[in-house]
Length: 201
Length: 197
Image (cartoon, rainbow over the protein chains, first blue to last red):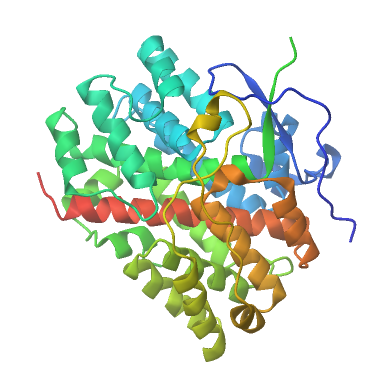
């Protein structure tokens, strides 16, 4: 076997949480674009993802990648009922901030800021961490996400009560559970298979 | 096949939470498809079913979730695990449980948030019972579960050195990451199910 760990080219490592666009550099060899078969393209779901080293690395197991991607899209993009998109993204950003995934936090902080228009609050979460005081509703969503992310899991009836108190119905609470749980999946892949890099210029 | 998350969370067909989950039909379908493809894989060339269930039992144990330990323990037995392996996984769990997430950040302003914690090594008798390849996977799994921000290329090199292929590393990374999701969804839904509005 020629399998080996890759040494990423010289790059600037981000050392703070940011909403800036970042690159991601793999530590293992992604599949080559020309080797992607119909099975791998099905796994990528969006053909444009063939350009991404992250998705081409995960395409080594295309069935899991496809299922992961379709789970992700429904949790975050399905507009039916539940939590507004901005607050699903807030749960993802808070989870990523708490686990320490600078790359994932950058993407989902951007989305949270875009959809909520609460740029300052999102930046406070990134700068100060998950104990930051935002407002009652966002505090409850962040606290629930953090409790679910802790190991052992610290999520309990008090978090359900806290979310209900700020107006979340059960569909919205399930969206918080799904979004925070899903980022416990995503953070671990992004953190462990490569590293973020500041984009040039 | 019954939906694993519904089964483990105790969500009955026709119940209020069944209706809520039905509003995210693709997420529900593909969480199950993720489970199916990880534990009934098309190919076992890069990670066997026995290895997959062994890692799953370790992850369930590290989270201290009895419902998950029972579920994956049953899968492990069905996959043909000898009693010695089952006992070794139990011993590995007992020795490895800590609290997360902890770990280091890149040197800089975030260093003040660094949180120290152990880099876990499987003890010699357990290592012998697991075998070197599975023991290496367990050590990596401990990092992924408790301190994923400490990830570094050296962790992947240790897996390659123990005989995992690049594709095998992708598979076991997906496995541990997926379980980190599934365990939390089940835990969250169980709490919600026990607390009707």
